[in-house]
Image (cartoon, rainbow, N blue to C red; front, side, top):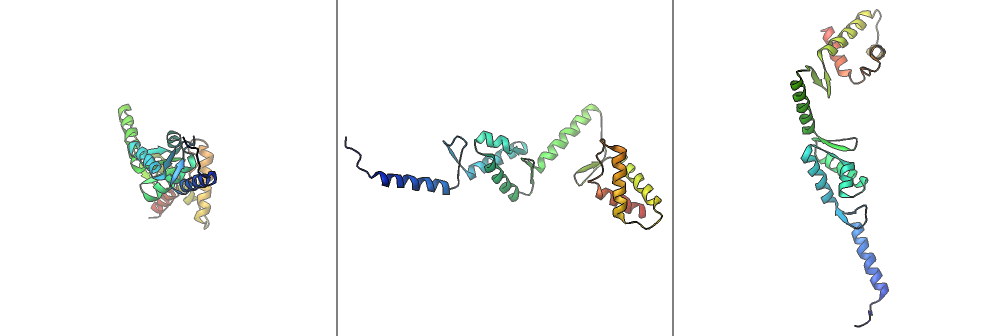
Length: 190
């Protein structure tokens, strides 16, 4: 056998060039550092998980694929930006169809147990008739109590305070019910 007559400096330059090409490409290294995965493959893994059950936990995907969570988060933001039926919620990508499936399962469970909830879904919140009539009574009482012109914002803050004091932990206030308040108030004036 002949001795290796190659220039060691040239060999190092080739390795450095190859390594730079790898870093500049769309390859992501795994946590072990022994394997690489393309961004397209990671995106496909996330999309497969979403299509399978309607949601994908980025922590679970990151550990299954073996990449850092930050790479999964970047891909998730890209996927959510491309598809309007997906939402990024607390480290998970959730499809609109997932919520429909959950609602059907809850409905089936309630039907099996003989319980039925009637209500109105508005802005992502479920309003039962009892809750709406309670809010209507509070609003009606506040409007009747007005003897001098008062700004609606002052009435609204007063109502929030009263409802929080009355319910403390049971309802948690009415912070997301501005639409309900406005519709009840305009219904009283019509």
